[in-house]
Image (cartoon, rainbow, N blue to C red; front, side, top):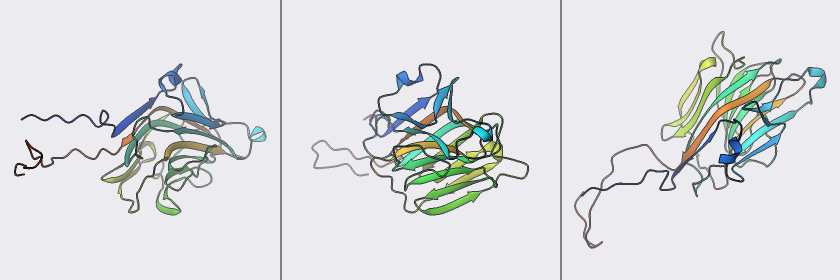
Length: 239
């Protein structure tokens, strides 16, 4: 007997959204899957959440955000993986960038994220740090290594994922590596969405994203499972 299980994507348990923001990028996106808010725009093949502006012209508290919904899973993704390239810089260091997965509002999101789910916050005003929040609880704080910074002139790779092994956040340029962070009350709910946001104030910075790949669902890690066979749905073979 040879049994073949369909891939998680075909079974509706896993889906993927890939955005390179090149010309015509929106044609591959279904209505409602991706929305831009605030000052966010697509320009020169890059998602620009905010742009550096001379302080005298800056709009205090200006925010930009992209909100995304995965196209297929009927249930809120329990596990997810998001990869993208991030550039923070060009200005004076403010105020920061965030990734959120939760019950997000319809408007723009700033450096503190939004919702009562998961928030990973790049704080760049005064003291640089990455904060990880779940609901109202601060779970973890990471500082850049000596001589490293969250602000770069070039795009740097970012990885954020939650799997059976816990939360992982990787920002190589700042030598920030968080892994195996389990969230005891982790329970994504229907309607949760993914958000990428940034804010500028009296001081400003570029907060740009490119090559965004977002995937998630209920698929767990690959592993062996017991299988039994029945010819009449009453009697089963021994495991």
